[in-house]
Image (cartoon, rainbow, N blue to C red; front, side, top):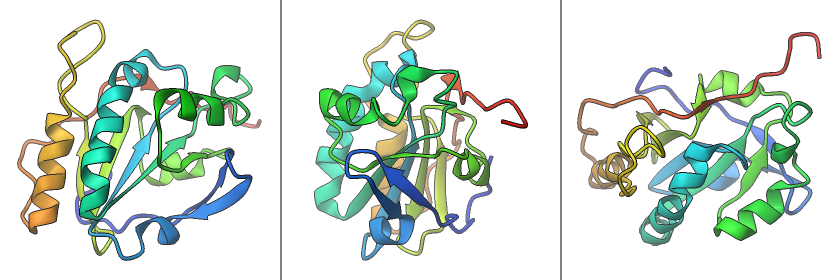
Length: 183
């Protein structure tokens, strides 16, 4: 996992909804915190928590928190995750934040992202304060209603200038669908 205190690796990724590149610096500028979420269109874990993601964005964006979703899956092997399908998916589930495509998978590697979903919270200086799960819900193993408890606790702490409560639990979900080397 990316060590706490690490400065967020900069990126410039395609926003399939607009056809433009989006930079981390543009998303995070002047914000009290920035949440980077590794998501995709097809993962049952992401689909299960999408309503809670939307609720958290609605609650915390007005408090100065920026949100961005990144899809790093191999779209050739998993066409449901293709950039062409991302805008319709984002609209269908209610994403109001940029949902970007990591075609080279380099951004996922820089963040040590392992699965979808995976969450990273950075403070106003873009220093990593939290990395891990949204909450303890899982669609099959623990099918309780998603409440976003872990991410909400992390955001509340960062907004107050406090340390994020421990332990920080890794996310559970579908592995990122890595491209076969040489492709």
